[in-house]
Length: 318
Image 1 (spheres, rainbow, N blue to C red):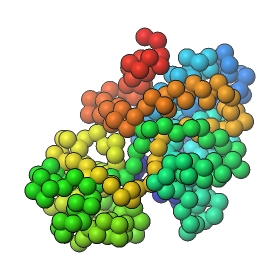
Image 2: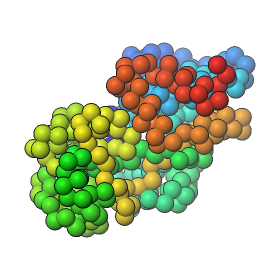
Image 3: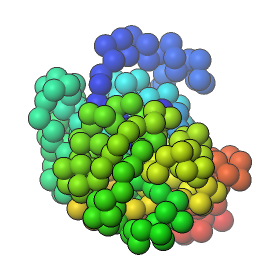
């Protein structure tokens, strides 16, 4: 699943596929017991998408909830089209989410894929819009924190030094023609080619469809085939390719702060919100980068990485 281009397209067959796909990835969602069937305060199923960051976040949620007296476990589903309907049904109880992404997903679900965007670079307004959309689906949006995972653009350190680049505005003023390694959808996405041109005056002479933040895309920039790559703010391997992010100084990207979203009926307790809130307030974007690196570069297990982080921040006892 691409984290960089989080599309809001709702798969019509997703709901029917949830239980079957979940069964292939671990305990079936249909096996989830009722709230009072688990140990202690009850069973909580934490949903995770199929990419590293989501897996680590889900493991942290699970461990924190276990420490708070719930019987929590992680259920991995490949993407939002699968886990969001499961969250509505109470087959899973909580997921780590991204404010703008989920807001636009639910916006498209309710109003169609051509609906006027509700997310923006203003996190408070974005969360307010998200809560309004989530409520009718039986979802409760918990407060967001400082950690974000947004779309971002990177160039080589040499290219940045040569043209004195620190921001995307600097790149626009430089007048350089840029071939951008990205996904094909960058051609029409507001945050990508159109936004780079209108907001920053960047001359995107061509797109190289190698994907969002893929090794191939970053290698193309390192080799000089392309001049810039579309990636994410929590990309943990930029240094490996000699790349550096350019600051989005005019806030082209939406506020994709991390926040928990729960099924209001099965996991709307104040105790759950309080337990997860401690992590949300502690977690930073730099933390996400480091956590991703431990899994992707050092090949450590998400559960182990989550445990170590929580202990280091005093959120779990050693």
